[in-house]
Image: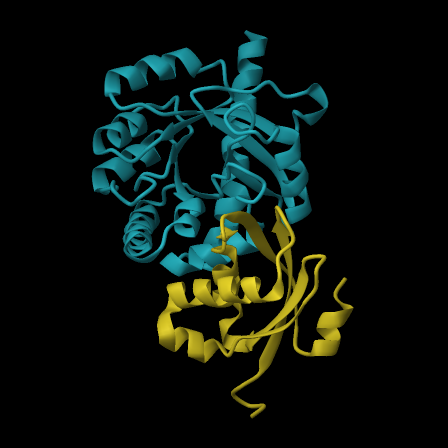
Length: 103
Length: 223
């Protein structure tokens, strides 16, 4: 598994007009990735929302090949249910532990 | 890290977000400065912010004669003159005029316009930067986005062929419309822009445009 399927953990910050719950955010992310890359691209990126807390910080997992593609898809999210949001990736790590240490 | 600039941001009074608020978010994202380019209106900036908020205007018009009139009105008065592109005749008239600094979204906000060899040659001759508006990619979906991306891909080919100046902008109307430089670089990769090209389009090229303006302003003062 290590050879071809290395994982990356993207630490992101959500800027939003109101608080956003985890499932709405996950839907928005999947929607955006799907809209940009279709079924095949979405399956290849192996997305997983590791965590997201109320203060707007989260960790998203994907394969190391798709980091820039996922960054673009996150940047494409502009609103959720009519609420304006913006997502910025602030750090990338190869381990969950490393991602947790990104301030 | 190079200094990044976003040269197409809209703020109060066109939107309800003041320029200082936009600057605060932009600096957090890692920008060195932004330019406020409201449609047919320019803002006054407080003295202490003048080195980071640049005053500009985005001329939006339907006819060439109106465009020429507005260029005459704004040239020399506003440091950064941008034309809201899209329609073929407006693109042509704007690129023929050396007083223009940037042609914003030449493929229109919905991918309706396009560039060609003749237009890009004029852009090079007159030192006008071609803008790639990332907001169009962010806000559109499906067919619209596909059309915009393919237009941008074509435009990028022309820009490369004639070595024209290209810039990346967010065209933000609120703090949620702004994107960090690395996000814009990732978005630019969607239509085939290489990383180093995108970095240049966010740092060196905007800086070159701004410096040209500073020099011009200084010349005017000396006279």
